[in-house]
Length: 368
Image (cartoon, rainbow, N blue to C red; front, side):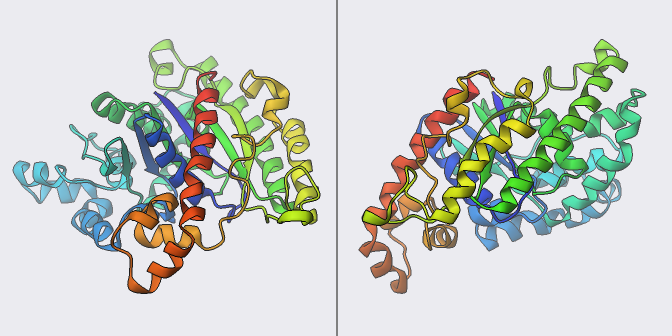
């Protein structure tokens, strides 16, 4: 199993759309995939599940997220067992660690999106867990058991779910911040990729990632130096590896206007050319996977998904389906039928684009 994080310090780059469609494409390529929504904004959860489903997950666990120990003491063993027979949010599963109480003896099932694609939903209260992550991190250096459990909790959760469900890939969705929670997520992942709009802000986001990775790597190395072998086994054996980037949401020009090799607007093209150089100047080569540098300089999937999708992602979110499944889903609102049917080929063509992207991601993960 490989743990993959999709991350950029710049918000609004289409990370949720990319994560959702990559996961579906990986599943259709034969991989068993788990998505864990660790962004307190819960956009991936909203993309994947209906509001009614989310309410059915959140409402029964409200008291546990407020105070796990008190809520646990107020119900019988059988009532609690019944509660965790249904999908619960990631914050529910992390809450005993946040409160410093006993961990769950069994894990709630993930939500099933299709046969080999599952999700552990996010929750808007996850900022509470991040506060504890930040508060306890300094105690990791002295080997404090609760601090170590907190620092390694996300990776441990991914590994425990994999023992049960036999996942090939676990995708961790994150917020754009460089805070304590993302430090732990990225440091404990096996790999990460960067989605980047071809603009000034993504360049600065990449610079910030490089600076943060350098600091986090020093912290990671110090922890390994100070901790005993018994306590080190909770951590990943090696620091996260960068597997590449993709341009995303670039404006596509048609026909004779396509005057460059990417076929994108001139302003976008200028920034697109700067992204590989920025990555190689800011992210140490030692933290990259060992593949040909020219391949790392090119968007993952040979540019298969770099162009914007206009309103297609909004329709996909409305129906909680990948874009390519919309024309044949059978339950479209009457007002959407003509729009989607009239653009059937455009919707369905996205499938091959994302599968090309997914196959390249799979190849790169094999090198990690």
